[in-house]
Image (cartoon, rainbow, N blue to C red; front, top):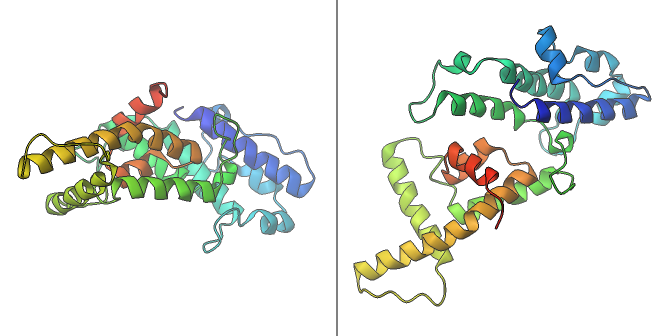
Length: 241
């Protein structure tokens, strides 16, 4: 099963939260169990362990304007994330965009449900820091400020053209103060833009890593920045400089 490690970590946090809220010992449901049993309700034991008091206590972890019921988190978001992760990637062939591989499209569909799971239930970051909704939003804002937030969200070639021009202006904020172009006029403008994009590129990987550590999904990073999934995966795989 894809994402098994992440599913197990989230499931363990959900089980621990229900155990604490009910005063019982709720066994962790693993990705391996879900794959083997193929139940239509993969986390049924969690639902059965909930009490009205626990439902009220666990229902609003980080969404002040859109409170989430813990039952929705379990049966819709976590369950669908696990079920999608268990499907063969060929299952996602229908409606696949031409610019994505089938593996990327499967991952995008999985991330869509992962993104709806409150970060309080996500595993801690690699440095042991607990993820929070506030940290995730701050990381999204940092990406949006750096990349303009327009390229990935543009829905047509025309709009992407406007978005790219906006992104170019955004990149100029990264122009090193000591950069001096050798050309003049349009050539100088082009040099400045190249230097700005190079400076932004130097910061890009760190911004992406920080965003992932804070709980921003790869799909969301792609939407904000326009960076392809394969590139995001490469950034994750490369050691930080």
